[in-house]
Image (cartoon, rainbow, N blue to C red; front, side):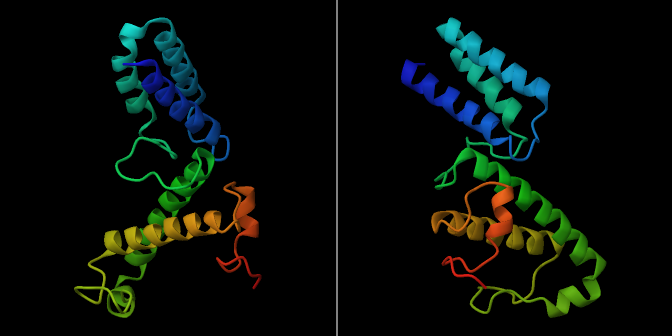
Length: 167
């Protein structure tokens, strides 16, 4: 692994740890181990490939994981961690809501009018994922428009219109 690639790995890992300051989801011992693995890679270039696998494996379950497929979007690591945490909570709450009100949710809650396929959700999982996806899109739009600064505290100021207009 060349130096530029290793620097990219280190930057992503460090950005993720820094971004976790917003949600505090990564345990302290995991953070310490990440720093140790990075220091090991800095000192021994022959171990960087295996250390990269270990770093990614350790950080994968936490919000803000930067090594995903496709375009990573415009959100910095801290904002991505906030959005990942929020979407996880939205999904869990939506599943609970759907299952608690299923006799009403199934017939009454409909997909967007232009959606293809069935006009109703197949169940709690589809409904929850749809809400979380919409929340992620809205968060990105709010950040892009400068309405939300990407922090947990900034969410209290971001409840206006996505164009930045006040309600």
